[in-house]
Image (tube, rainbow, N blue to C red):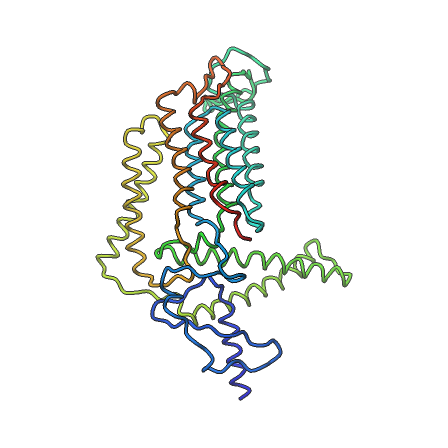
Length: 423
C-alpha cells in the first residue's frame, strides 16, 4: 500500500509540473482533482477524479480565470502586436521629426495607461534607451565616417585619415556639414521610433498568451519558447538563493570559484526540472501527431515557403520607392499563402485549447486604429511628400502637417477602449 501511494503521489507531482497553458491532445481525457496535502497524506481515490466536460476543453466558450469569478481578461495579445507594428509601418513612411515624436508619445501614453504590473511589462523603458542608443550611434557614424549627402554649411573639420585605394568611398574624419547631421538625425529617429513601437508591443502583450495563440503548425515552437521563458526566472532565483546562502556561511560567491560552486547546483536543479517536465509532458501525450497524406504535406511546405518569400518580397517593395506598384499585391498574396500553409500544417497537430483568448470587438477596434494610422500616413506620403519628408539640402525647418497629425492621434484609441491588463 505504501508503494502504491508513493507512486500515485509521484504521478500527481508530474502532472502538476505541467503549466496550465499546456493542453491535452484530442481523444485524451483531462482530469481535475484536489491537490494532495503536503505531509505524506495519501492521494484521493480514483473515484474522486472527475473528467472535465467537453465544453471546458474543446469549445470556445469563456471561463472565469482563477482568482475571481467573472474577472475580465485583457485584450488579445495579437491585437497589441498588430497595433504596434502598424505604428511602426507609419514611422517608416515619414522622416518628419515632429510626426515621429508624435508617434512615440502616442505609444508611450497607451503603454502607461494599459500595461500591467508584470515584470515583462517593464520592457518599454529598455526599448526607449535602445532607440536613443541607435540615434546616437547613427550620428556618430555620420561624423566619423562621413555622409554621401552634399552640404555647404560646414560645422567642423576633423583630421582625415588617409585610406588605401581599395577603400574608396569610405573616409575617416573630414568635413562635417549641417546637412549630413540633419539627414542622420532624421534617419536615426525613424529607426528609433520603429524600435520603440516594437517595445510597446512587448510591454502590452503577454508573451505566454501570445505564444499560446499560435496556430497548430507552430505549436511545438511556441511551447518550447514558453518553457524557456518560464524556467529563466527560476534559474535566476536559484542563483540568488545559492549566493545568499554562501554569503551567510562566509564563503566566497564571486569569481571563478564562486561561479563553479553556484553554477553547478543551478544547472543540476534546471536538469531535474527539465526531466520532471519532460516526464509530465509525456504522461499528457504531448508530441503525438496525426497522419496526413503526402500530398497535403508537400502542399503545406510549398504554400508556407512561397508565402514567406512573398511576404519578404512585398515588404521590401513597400519600403522602397521603386517597388510601391508591386509591393502591396505581392505582400497580400504571400500572406494569404502563408496562412493557408499554416492552416494545413495545423492538421498534423490535433490539440484542444484550454480557455482560448477571444478575439472580440475591442481587439478589432484596436487593430483597426493602428492600421488606419499606417494607411493614412502612407496616403499622405504619396500626396504630400514635402510635408512628411522635410528638405535636407538645403535644411528646412519641419512643419507639423494637420491631417497626418490627426491620423497619428487615432492610435490613442486603445487607451480609451482597453482596461489595464491584469497582472
